[in-house]
Length: 476
Image (cartoon, rainbow, N blue to C red):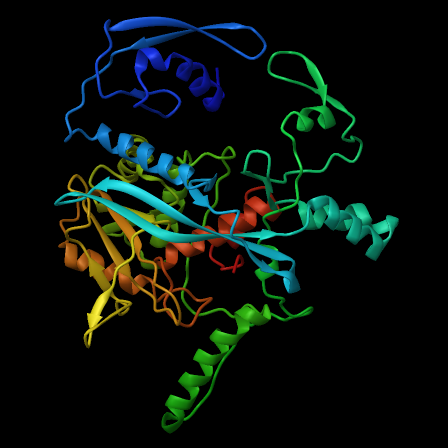
């Protein structure tokens, strides 16, 4: 039975057995007492009168120091948020009864919280931060009607597909977000589909079961900039100046790199970055084609330097904490196997660092008696780091308002023997190397370049780019 809520409802029919004090996440049941038998079977009834057999098996007794207790603590805390009538969207909880309306832009903001309870170096800590969900106050259907009135029937389907494909929408009946992958123009709400039990039902009747009344959609397009309609890239350029005008020339170049991205103008710099892209299944985070990419990068390096690199540092983005063990056992061997194919006497020092931007931690510095954002370059590698990891936080950028978000780095493989201080300095300096921004970004430049390339291929090209483009930053 896949529905977690239905599992809980069926299980909680037996509160006389398990008691009123319990925590259940859909698969694991936590109780403050032991049941009579190690394995117990009970029968529950669904609303349709079907009988469901539930087996409860004692698997473990947890001391307060057990890592599994962290899961229990998070379940209890999420239950408290539900008692406060907060609604879960994704991993966070939001308050729909206290929305902030922005009628000028047809937007609505739900305030909420993001929380996590984890074991840090000295103790178990609760990390909580405010979170806001930006929602559009019209449905996708309303948008389609408006677009049809604006462009007419001839261009409607083409423009509607262009606007909606890839957009994230929120369904109010279950408060979940989905991405629009395609539009079936031949179907209507009266069409039927097969449910998991094999029965057919129309879309209209299906959503009536949930008392569905959608009126919000989550769009990010409202905040996107509008580049120039027609631009010319600055691919090959030369700036000539006298020695006494060096400062003015430097300011001019910095200003150009600052203003051209917002205008949609691509301006290249004279440093070579090699890029390679491989396709994989949707939703797959663990990469299969690392060996091919690394071999191509090493060949390119050799063609310019006539020797192989003695150190290789990999910054790996887009992996959650739960996938770290899989990463170590699956991707690291690909790197090591690739290096062996270069030559038996080639043994470069390898470091693999996982980069995590979506963190809830926030840090403050006491400056002149006041708590303020830490200055750029601040490193946190004690107290709030994990005892089982080689990890650290870096605050690389500055913000004009609000609290600055740090970036979490986890060194999962290291044969370089570099001191942590050197690793942290290198990581921070690479945050200055992104050509599409004149200042410092949150992550090392290779991560941001990889993100831009993956977004372009995944959203627009849908195939591997031509290899002749590998040494060009065409995706910026």
